[in-house]
Image (cartoon, rainbow over all chains, first blue to last red; front, side, top):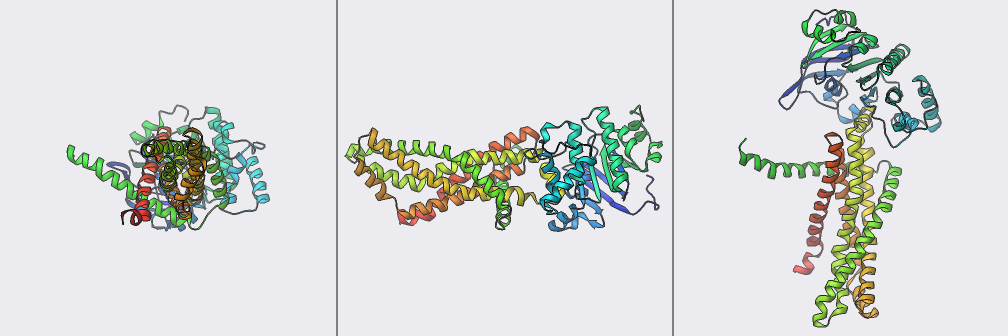
Length: 253
Length: 261
C-alpha cells in the first residue's frame, strides 16, 4: 500500500476500520487518508465493502473496530444532533439518484436549501436555476424525476448534492446502469465540477474506465481489504496480482 | 440450533423483540411528535386521511349498525323487546364496535398507504438521502404521519358513530317495522355524552398506535420492492391487532368498574 506521510491532511481518515454483517467481514482492518480537494476513487468488484465504507463515513452504519474521522470529527462518537450537523457539510449522489418522486426536479434540488439552509423562496429558485445550468439541464425544473433519463437523474442528484456547497461529495456508483456515452458525460461532469468547485470527491465504482477518467487517488478494495491506495498512476501500475487481475479485465484502460 | 430452541426463538423471542422495538419506535415518535414539526405536512396528510378513510368508515359503520340491529331485534323479538335493539346498538355500537371499525378502516386505508410510501422511500434510498442532507427523517416523515392519525382517527370515530346509528335506525324503522319514536328513544337513551367523548379519546389512542405501527413498518423496510409489499401487509395486520388489543384494554379500563363492579 503506497499510503505515505506525504499525503495531504485527510478530509476522511480511516484508521484500522473493521465492519461485519453477521459472520461476514465486509471491511477488514482498512486504513487510509482521503485527501481534501481531490477526487478519490475506491475501486473494486461488487460486494467488497465499497458502499459500506461510504455508509460508515456518513454515519449511516457503524464499524466494530477502528475510527472513521471525517472533517476532523470522529463520526461514531458524535451525538445524533452533531452528526446531522456534520452531514450538512456532505453531499451524496446515490446509486439511483434517490430523488423524491412526488416532487418536481426543481423542488428536489431546492430541498436542502429550503429544509436545511432555510433560504427564502426567491433565493432557492435562483440557486436551483444556477445549479440546473451547472449540470447542463436548464429548463427541466418543472418535470418530475420519473420523466428524466437515467443520466439526467444522476445530473439532478449531483445538483442536489452540491446545492449546499458541501466540503465533501460522495458518489455511489455514478455510472452504473448508464450506456458508455452517458457514463463518459457523467465522468466529464464530475471532472468539471471538481475543477470548478475544488471540493473533495469520493467516488465508489467498479468501473475501471471511469476511475481512470476521474481519479486523482485510487483505492483498490478486494475481499474487504484495501489492497492498494495512492495516486492513480501508481495504483494502475501496481504489480499486485489481484489488483492487476481486476484492472486488466478493462481493455480500454 | 435445535428445533426446539429455533421454535422458541421464532415463536416467542422474535415477536417479543418486535413488540419492544415497536414500543421504542413509538416512544421516539411521541417525543419527536410533541414538538409538532412540519404542521403544513400534518394538515396535508390529515386531509388525505379524511378524504380516503371516511367513505370506507361510513360504508362499514352503516353496515355494522344495520347488522347489529337485525341480530339484536331477532333475539329480542322472541321476548317482545324489538325496540330494545336500539339500546344494544347504542351501548355496544357506540362504545365498542363503531370506534373499532373506524380505526380498522384507518389502518387498512391510511396505515397501508403510509407503510408503502415510507417503504418505497426506504428501498430507493430517499430516507438515506434525507439523513445525509442532515434532515431528521423521523421529524419529516414519521411525526407528521403519526399526528395525522392521532387527529384523524377521532374524527373518523365520530363519523362512524353517526353513520352506525343512522344505519341502525333506518333498518330498525324501515325494514324491521320498529316504531320510529321508540327506536330513536332507545338509541339515544343508551348513548351518553361521556360515551361520545370516550370514543374520541379512544380514537386518538388507536390513531397513535396505527401511526406508529404503519410508519415503523415502512421506515424499517428491507428487501426491495417485495419488501415494500411485505411491509404494507404487516402494517395492516399488526395495526389491526394493536387496535383490537388496545381497544380491549381501554374497555376494561373505562367500563370495567361499571360492568364488573
